[in-house]
Length: 194
Figure 1 (cartoon, rainbow, N blue to C red):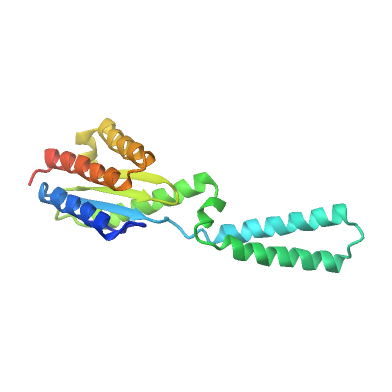
Figure 2 (cartoon, rainbow, N blue to C red):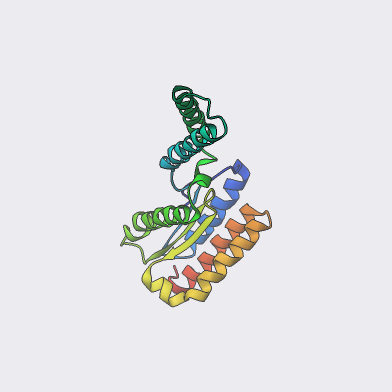
């Protein structure tokens, strides 16, 4: 099952869906590929950065132009805050306003919620894998149920994620996803054959 796709065209989506269908046919376990444009809306960070910039603007104004009245300085700060708040609300910019550790944390939390909802909530299946990609955070996580994770081993998961990241850096996102789907399918077929 494929959850979402970023800016891929129909042919690319079809190729990935075909790889997913082939993977699901090879195993009785559940396999989900989730690709998100971003894992969180980061609504607090535009306001924080706009407020900090407005405070700095007021400080700079009072330092270099002491003749400016308090009222004029306040108007400059309010204008700076409003303009920057609007600018920082631009969705592609929002994730970059959050610290990297926060972005990774939000993406990881989203991945674990997806894993719980899409893999663990289906006990009728023999375990499963979630391959999670969050584009804005540049975050990839591969989650497997405890039995599958232990059977395949950490080195196998790291290899799959490493190959995916290398293909993404090489500028081949669709091939990276198809290769990751096939690698995960091999692991599932080995440990949960149909």
